Length: 357
Image 1 (cartoon, rainbow, N blue to C red):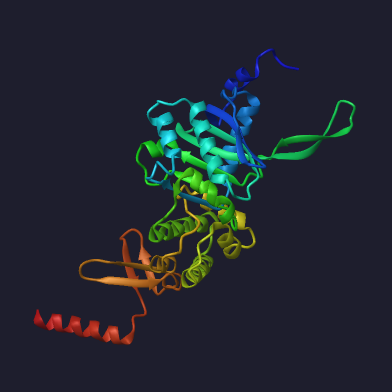
Image 2 (image 1 turned 60 degrees about the horizontal axis):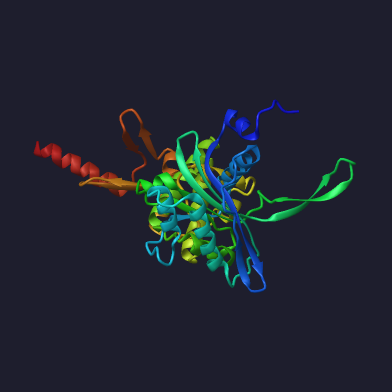
């Protein structure tokens, strides 16, 4: 029973996660002669069902691991999606239907000759309500055969969109892009999905070459966040970070790319999703595919610092076993158990200075 309001009115009255600006779907079908675009010529009406679909897509995409982050390629001739979106979002010279139809045609070119089966391509421009950030998401969804009960309580076939199982999707932070941010584009790059996702990366025109040093530093920050979230003791913290260091050093030594899912499974096997969720929720946009930087990895197990006249490097273990103490109030380090040779030199230096006075 309804209260007489239409679906759109009920959506507007609800507390929304995302304000949908525009949404449309085109279908890329695979036929005997290759892929063809079955297009739609008007945007979808934003009712309760469409709102729920886009909210789910946005939420599931944000939670998925195995994403690569980057920016648009500068070559807009060969990678035209950036030009299409620029005309739509920044210049306002193209409407949403034309923009997405051009993108669907570009996708058709990229997917030709691949093993992809195509699917329904959803394009959505939405604004996150909490901070008014604009996003554009494109995701390929497929039909899934399920079962339903009809009015006679008979079980019948029922096709529905496989929202949770999508493997090909990308997202542009339109607001960050317009503000000139360094990274604003991402796409799903699942483990072992390189050959499948390559055409989608090409379609988006995503340049995901990343600086290994920066990505390794961000990884260290995410690990610190995880340690704090688990309220680990000093010994647990040290063991955890040393294990992270060992895993990443193996990646470096063997020239293996970092992957969030594989890393989390090895480092925190009892509940890898907990670690993955911290990575995804940190806002650091840690990319898959980089080779950890060996020098930057040292920060996982060592503290290093200095000034014009001195430099110090010590393991985390020195803090946990009491060899070095840090006084937060005075912001001073107290070093204990100095080696005999250093003690002798320091005593001699102090003695000589006293005689000179």
